[in-house]
Amino acid sequence: MQRGNPLRSAVDKRLPRIAGPSGLVIFGVTGDLARKKLLPAVYDLASRGLLPAGFALVGFGRRDWSKEEFQDYVREAVQARARTEFDQNVWDRLADGMHFVTGAFDDDAAFDALASTLAEADRRQGVHGNWAFYLSVPPERFAGVVHQLDRCGMAKPAEGQWRRVIIEKPFGHDLASAQELNKVVNTVFPEHAVFRIDHYLGKETVQNILALRFSNQLFEPIWNANFIDHVQITMAEDIGLGGRAGYYDGIGAARDVIQNHLIQLLALVAMEEPTSFSPRQLRAEKLKVLRATSPTGPFSETTARGQYTAGLQGSVPVVGLREEEGFDPDSKTETFAACTLEINSRRWAGVPFYLRTGKRLGRRVTEIALVFKRPPYQPFYPDQTNLLTNNAVVIRVQPDEGVLMRFGSKVPGVGLEVRDVNMDFSYSEAFTEQSPEAYERLILDALLDESSLFPTNSEVERSWEILDPILEYWDEHGEPDEYEAGTWGPASADRMLEKDGRTWRRP
Ligand code: BG6
Image 1 (cartoon, rainbow, N blue to C red):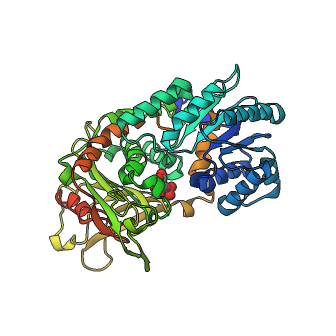
Image 2: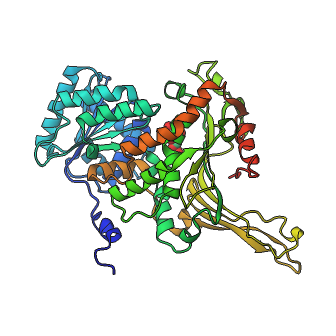
Image 3: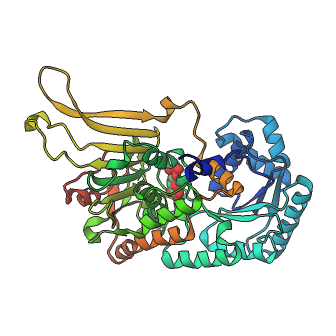
């Protein structure tokens, strides 16, 4: 029976996906993230015709900028990074709706000026009081900004209007601080008006995890402990941390990436089928699997952390973390982190989930590999299957987005030799459409009040709860191991899997 099927109605409701009258205020607009991602994404939305006429883009920051200077700054960012081609007409319309308010985050007068700017834009541009406030600022600033928005009456919508807050990670540095932040934010904005960004959820390939699992008959029947030996989630980057000391030193790879991106990937891979793709059902299923997830010990064997030393990236010599500008020469910050998680459920009992991430690794790749068990019996002589490894399904999140299946096949010839082959689906070959950038999708969703791709306060807190014991253990036990830039991390990461008779994939 198709009528009334919640999966269908959830999809139908999404059309058309054009934002209604609204405006976006960006705090931290002069920062790296705004320049490289947010402003280009706003332009891309405009050029795809997904923003309303009269859309207002308001920057708030300490620079003493006129409207024209702000427009020049945005234009430069857009021309350097936007995905879509620069079109003068699109630009002119967008630039027309821009404003800049000068001030610090604790400056009452500046927030009063911001309130007047918004009121003016409501009247002149037809924003109708529908504002999203994007906090692209360090977490210690969240509370101040949120209180100011409250004080000036900007957080409370009048009848028929909406106000939303979009919050960048990191959301806290452990469970206690995340709870504290949630409390502060939720005293001013109700939970339904809070959009916490995890930009990995905005990636096409990440959204495809659920489509792959739940729209096919091929995968789901074998997506469990009866067939799967273990799961590896890898987010490897080749870049170093030059220029990011202010944010990264003292934070490290586990807080930067495992607590959010990698645990979210785990939730999508491991969750049960939701009864619909409505935000409520989807997030309920994610939370359920996260509640069943915990770190496996002993941490001396099941986790690894490392810090890159000087080495070669490709053929280019690069410095180690402690020599990077702005880093403490005695910094203990880890640039590589790996851990083992388990999920206590019928579906996943006994299947380790190995998570790893690192900077200055061999190459940039994010993937989820589901590695299958060996067949219970092989009717071949051992030397006929020497080159056969475990079957695997690999979801390639980036780059070369796609899905790969590895299985055994007979080598052509008179003998009988079986070895691994790959069947490879690639987005770029299968589709002509280009994937939107994650931030395009997420900013649009926030304007549309579509919250499926934003983790809830409970998900964020649960993720810290999973990670905190490992962070505490690391705090108490020495320093990260070393690994040479351009390699695949410290030897301790290899030992982590070797003790279980397994090895990391070399993607
Ligand atoms: C961010 C991290 O969340 O994700 C960065 O703070 C990391 O350290 C970045 O480089 C990677 O994002 P992407 O989309 O390039 O994989």
